[in-house]
Length: 83
Image (cartoon, rainbow, N blue to C red; front, side):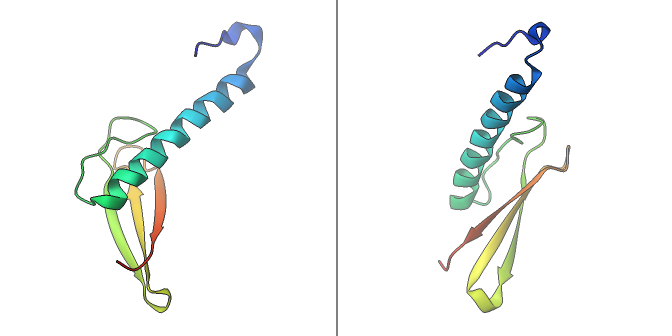
Protein backbone atom coordinates (compact mmCIF):
# COMPACT_ATOMS: atom_id res chain seq x y z
CA UNK A 1 0.00 0.00 0.00
CA UNK A 2 1.49 3.32 -1.06
CA UNK A 3 0.62 6.47 0.83
CA UNK A 4 1.49 9.91 -0.44
CA UNK A 5 3.26 11.56 2.50
CA UNK A 6 2.94 14.97 0.83
CA UNK A 7 -0.74 15.05 1.72
CA UNK A 8 0.11 15.33 5.42
CA UNK A 9 -1.11 11.84 6.21
CA UNK A 10 1.99 10.72 8.09
CA UNK A 11 -0.08 9.23 10.92
CA UNK A 12 -1.85 6.87 8.49
CA UNK A 13 1.52 5.81 7.06
CA UNK A 14 2.85 5.18 10.57
CA UNK A 15 -0.15 3.04 11.54
CA UNK A 16 0.07 0.96 8.35
CA UNK A 17 3.82 0.48 8.86
CA UNK A 18 3.36 -0.54 12.50
CA UNK A 19 0.72 -3.10 11.53
CA UNK A 20 3.05 -4.67 8.97
CA UNK A 21 5.94 -4.86 11.45
CA UNK A 22 3.62 -6.37 14.07
CA UNK A 23 2.54 -9.06 11.60
CA UNK A 24 6.21 -9.84 10.88
CA UNK A 25 6.99 -10.15 14.62
CA UNK A 26 4.05 -12.52 15.06
CA UNK A 27 5.32 -14.68 12.20
CA UNK A 28 8.86 -14.61 13.63
CA UNK A 29 7.45 -15.67 16.99
CA UNK A 30 5.59 -18.59 15.43
CA UNK A 31 8.71 -19.82 13.63
CA UNK A 32 11.07 -19.35 16.59
CA UNK A 33 8.49 -20.71 19.02
CA UNK A 34 8.71 -24.02 17.17
CA UNK A 35 12.43 -23.98 16.33
CA UNK A 36 14.82 -21.82 18.36
CA UNK A 37 17.60 -22.52 15.83
CA UNK A 38 15.68 -21.18 12.82
CA UNK A 39 17.25 -18.23 11.00
CA UNK A 40 14.75 -15.36 11.00
CA UNK A 41 15.48 -11.81 9.87
CA UNK A 42 14.57 -8.97 12.20
CA UNK A 43 11.07 -7.70 11.44
CA UNK A 44 12.14 -4.12 12.21
CA UNK A 45 15.46 -3.55 10.43
CA UNK A 46 15.41 -6.69 8.22
CA UNK A 47 19.22 -6.84 8.49
CA UNK A 48 20.00 -8.85 11.59
CA UNK A 49 19.20 -12.48 12.32
CA UNK A 50 17.20 -12.73 15.54
CA UNK A 51 18.94 -14.36 18.49
CA UNK A 52 17.02 -16.51 20.95
CA UNK A 53 17.52 -16.69 24.71
CA UNK A 54 15.35 -18.93 26.87
CA UNK A 55 14.71 -17.91 30.48
CA UNK A 56 12.95 -20.45 32.68
CA UNK A 57 10.28 -19.02 34.96
CA UNK A 58 10.69 -21.68 37.63
CA UNK A 59 7.68 -21.03 39.82
CA UNK A 60 5.31 -20.80 36.86
CA UNK A 61 6.53 -23.82 34.91
CA UNK A 62 6.95 -21.64 31.84
CA UNK A 63 9.76 -20.24 29.71
CA UNK A 64 10.22 -16.77 28.28
CA UNK A 65 11.84 -16.96 24.84
CA UNK A 66 13.50 -13.61 24.20
CA UNK A 67 13.93 -12.68 20.52
CA UNK A 68 16.52 -9.97 19.96
CA UNK A 69 18.12 -8.32 16.94
CA UNK A 70 21.88 -7.79 17.23
CA UNK A 71 21.73 -4.96 14.67
CA UNK A 72 18.93 -2.69 15.91
CA UNK A 73 18.46 -4.10 19.47
CA UNK A 74 14.69 -4.54 19.07
CA UNK A 75 13.27 -7.29 21.28
CA UNK A 76 10.13 -9.31 21.75
CA UNK A 77 9.27 -12.05 24.22
CA UNK A 78 7.23 -15.21 23.82
CA UNK A 79 6.01 -16.88 27.02
CA UNK A 80 5.77 -20.59 26.43
CA UNK A 81 4.02 -23.21 28.56
CA UNK A 82 5.51 -26.48 29.66
CA UNK A 83 6.67 -28.74 26.84
